[in-house]
Image (cartoon, rainbow, N blue to C red; front, side, top):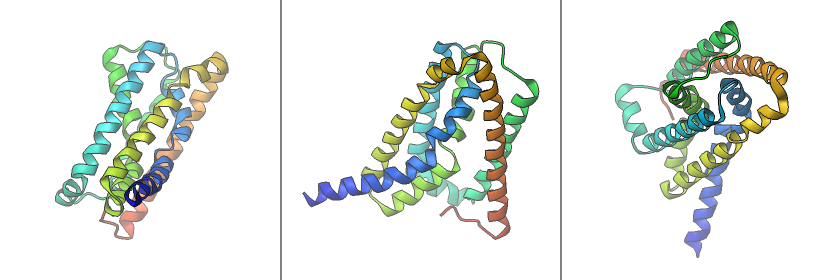
Amino acid sequence: MEGVVNFFRELLLSFIPLFVAVDALGVLPIILGLTEGIERKEQSKMLRYAMLTALGLGLGFVALGKGIFTVLNISESHFLVAGGLILLLLAIRNLLVGERREIPGATEAETVGVFPIGVPLVVGPAVLTTLLVLVDRYSIFAVVPAFLLNLACAWLIFSQAPRIAHLLGKGGLGAASKIAMLLLATIAVRMVHRGVLQLLVGGTSLL
């Protein structure tokens, strides 16, 4: 009985920081911007690829993250700078090019699902760092289910994106898309800023 209670305690203590790190509600406006003008079928495909990518990367880091980062001497700071720069370029491209008008093919849907939705919007430096810290602190048999529950929550939230788009209408969706790209650019700048600050103060370790 004590073991069961301890499991659920660690499950809850792992779920909460991961929920904050994933921030599915905060990412939703960006998902709306990235999927604007895309058919429902392709949106579902993007979401499926995004969740599979996030799942694979998260579980891979739980199993191999520490060893890989140690060998390559990679820190959270490096992830923040690299991921932030890529997201910033993506946001600038969307703001300059304007509204997406073409319907993407299967290859593009898969690509956008993997990046940037799967990585780094769903599973980015914050989630990876949180996972590695939690595995050090709690049982892996509690951390992994907590991660899976968070991905399920994110999937449920993102799957409502088409309904939200329908409620907003074309004009509202266009405005939301531009705002989302500005938010994405802001998030990217914050990531780069945090990464640079950590590098300047000598942050070379992930944990």
